[in-house]
Amino acid sequence: MSEPDWLEMMLERACIGHLKKFGVTPQLIVAMEEGGELIQALSKFYRLREGYIFEEYMKPGITHNLIEEIVDMEIMIAQLKIILKPFDHIYERTREEKITRAFDRVSGEIE
Image 1: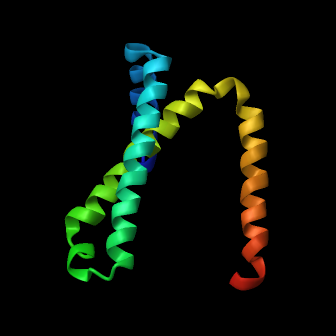
Image 2 (image 1 turned 30 degrees about the vertical axis):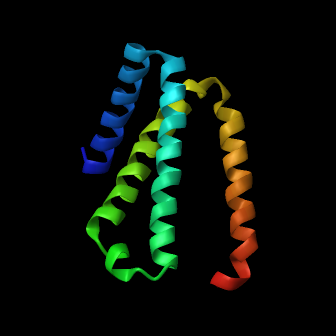
């Protein structure tokens, strides 16, 4: 089993375990909290970058914090996808539409 497959399997098991252990409602709240933490990390990253405070921007801590929050949110999104599993058909259709629309917006620029 390749590492990505192993990690995906581990992620799914961890998500199901968290949902069983803590329940759906608490995990929805955690997803909101993690979303807030990602917003805060993005804001700090952007503020330092746009303020041209390169010494701060280039510090590994700022970038590392943003990466940690992205991964935390990725885990919560995986849980949300499990919660919304009965609506997979809607998710897949919406995902396809949004990705196609995003591609169409820039297709002339990337070719």
